[in-house]
Length: 200
Image (cartoon, rainbow, N blue to C red; front, side):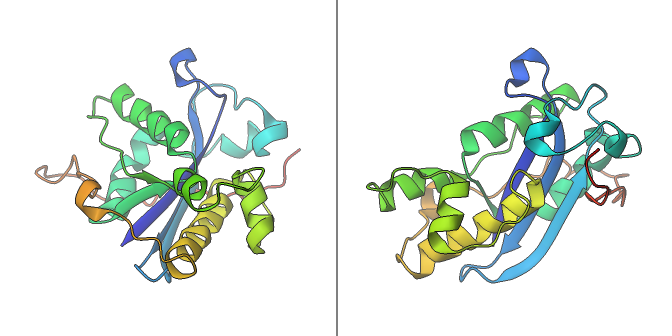
């Protein structure tokens, strides 16, 4: 199974204290078929940052869970799957920074659909998610919504595997290591808030 994730953030540099404000994950099988989805806004405990980019306002995250409150839920969703993102060099470090902030090992790793696109489609003028969704006719009405972007990326990966015959090198990609695997007393929080409120 593959879990394709996307995050929206308060800025572009976690080293300058930017935080994850939304996470979306879509799980598919090896044929690109949808299995399940996970999404929630997150309270970053600071200003949400560029509303004009992600469309998330401070009002929308007031009652959203903190990352620490849903981290167990996230790992239960990701476990036993291979993780991917479009521009993973952005998403993975942000999530690993969130893990580090709460005392957990930075174990988020996987592969990148942007890098795959560069290999398969070297002559395109862009391999951004927005460009590729238009190129392949993938519907993504909420660009820069974490779940919508994750769902579009999952469809993109499905196209790479089915239309282009791309094979994920699973010998060099490990499934996610669950930091709670040997721990007792952790339960699913169920604290998820989807993006339902329109931006101000």
